[in-house]
Image (cartoon, rainbow, N blue to C red; front, side, top):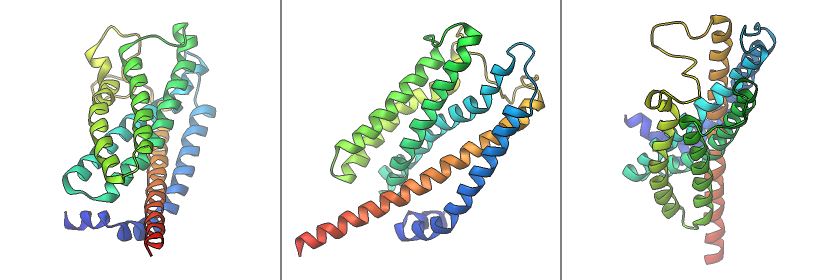
Length: 243
């Protein structure tokens, strides 16, 4: 564990991410491109939903990362509260815009998928509603960071907001199990017995999920590096003014 906490040091984090970020970014671009091209152009149409079902290759990975991004923010925020490591707070802050974009993509693609299948762009289904609330929590989280000048106070307050918002992140993930009468279909992928999706769709979907995960990681690394540089710049300007 001692080696893990070394990366809470901004200098150590910057050194490691300097060589890690380019590799992650390139891997994200390649893997995501392979998954999406395979899924959209080299998979057959579904016998019920036709080509509309191919939205799954955007919708599922983005929805998955929208939820996991908030969970990552929660873990990073708890590390800040418990151990006061600034890099963890900055990583949580950097993850929020990426999570917001992932949530927006999931909501938009869900509407595009739902209209021809359900006959409507939106329903107040438990999973959709909790996902919309999660989107609003992302907006509130980013706004709260922007409205507080002191970074430590901002990290403390956003950690509390992140803890509350995690309820809706979990509801977004497990709403189908809590409310079986919802219009939203069950999980496309599951560890439970029974075939939910043919491997013709499952293979490119898994690749797209990995690609979106790498995109999120690259954005968090880039955003955290930017936050560290901004804080260093602010400290230098403060010293100059004092001198």
